[in-house]
Length: 195
Image 1: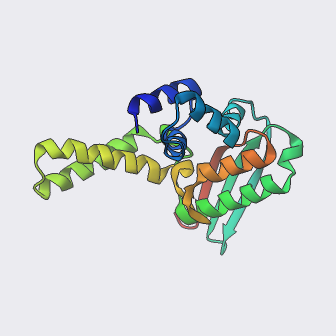
Image 2: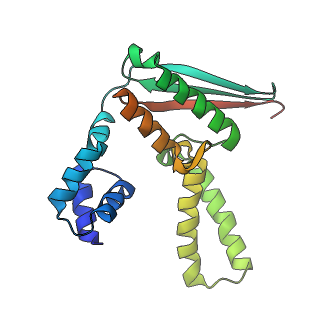
């Protein structure tokens, strides 16, 4: 698999490395144009284009677990028609349930609080030093830990509760394909009794 090919497709399409790698793996002996055509046929590029459209409608979804834990989620879409659709309503319920189970701290990795990351990385660094890891290895290990930390604490990058083979973002992408509209999680809040 050519890194140059993947990079070129990424620059042209703006797709994630995961989507591009999947297409390249499915068509290993194909040229760049054929791979992009394959992505278009799969609807991936169409979905990517939808993600740039404004979301001014949507709904607030809630879930309460045994009156001890509550979740509110603001889920946005483009039209009132989709906001009332079964697909959108199911997605809202799925996401609130997921949040109650996994307790993410942020919606997206780029929203993760830097103070939180620095504190966690500093703790991990001290643990690695105490374990006797060589200095030149510590930075590489910490880079991996940082990536894992961002993904574990961000809603959209967590493995989806009802199907851990996909992420929450993949589940949202499924709803985007079903409804034909851009859908995004604007924000969420978790209430926990005595915390």
